[in-house]
Image 1: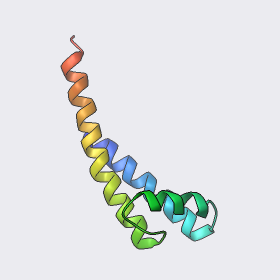
Image 2 (image 1 turned 180 degrees about the horizontal axis):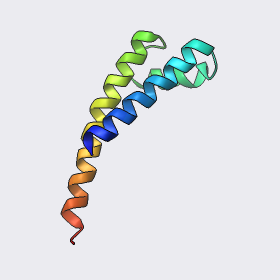
Image 3 (image 1 turned 90 degrees about the vertical axis):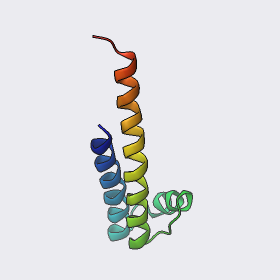
Length: 74
């Protein structure tokens, strides 16, 4: 579960930032999102944001699966 969330989260953020960089659309939104991370509105920033989201997505996915298995009894 952790890897699934990590891959989808990281890929989603990277694709959104890539779309924004290539087309210029939603550049204001993505530049504001980049300001919340340790990155800038650039290709390097897109990679940094993807790595951050992969790490946090894995942790949150693993935590959710662990809590689900802890509290759901079959």
